[in-house]
Length: 119
Image 1 (tube, helix red, strand yellow):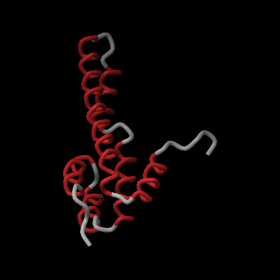
Image 2 (spheres, rainbow, N blue to C red):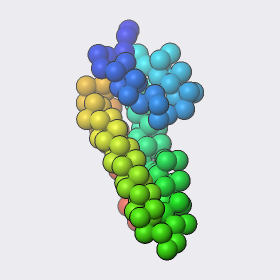
Image 3 (cartoon, rainbow, N blue to C red):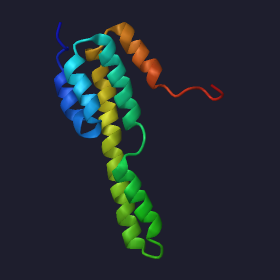
Image 4 (tube, rainbow, N blue to C red):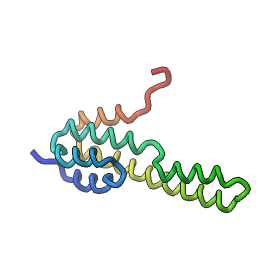
């Protein structure tokens, strides 16, 4: 059994943004459908919150009191980093149907949906 076409390409796109442990599991066990599901859900979770570049830029913008141009520059950097992260998440979601069976795609979709309030 081998990983489906497109798995290696997605790994290459995600690798700069996920942990080395994630990458190791993805390369060593990506041929197993259930493990691909777990890895895709985990990558989605990791990339669904601001990354370090966004946090640094947000903090630096907050610290740029009375320095409007500097604050605007940091805010632009934060927005650029957030846009890049959202594009990576969208690519992951778009690639999923080719990487999982229809049953596992349903589980992926259910797993990435936010929990209803009160859960």
